[in-house]
Image (cartoon, rainbow, N blue to C red; front, side, top):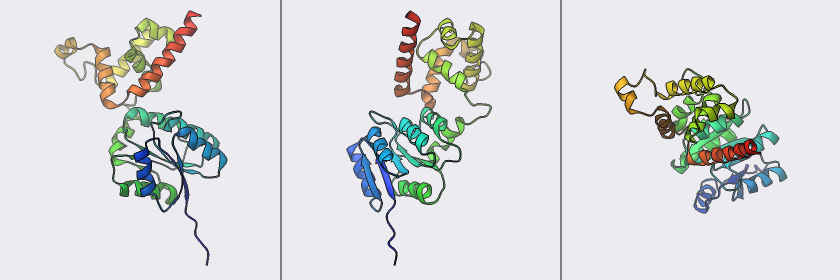
Length: 243
């Protein structure tokens, strides 16, 4: 009679309480616990384990960067992202790094344990992606379509969130001033900050740049973590301009 070994899974989670929850929920598996993304990557590099459950926000190496590094080395690896965030910015970041035809999952931490177990079973045992129903509508906004915000528009959205003028954006993005204004116009249309969705009386009451940033924040297109990264990138760029 053959003995069936438990599936080995790497768990990357920096919060002790969440690690305890995961260990309890996944007790039938052979778990390799990592306290942050770097520890998880070390385990990936030193073993042949290709099933990972990972938090998104972690010190040292966050879940998106961890996923990118894992998939660079093991494109067949399967990752279930377990997060409290359903912001569009995180889903957009993930969409950039997921290899074609890769099976993965995205589960919100607000779900009970049985939902997490279902997602793990789908991804690791059933060869099926599992995306939390609560984020599917957000995920859909990140797919190509008439309301899809392009990478170029995404860049200029962060530029105005950082307070850059049209002239500074033009210099940074190698555009003409008209090119910047064209990107902003498309961004405003897709965010609903234009005369097609706002009356002339209301339009006069709004600053379009500030209104666009406000809507982007509400939609999860911009969040504090990504804005801090953008601030650092801007500081680095400003240093190169000064030298």
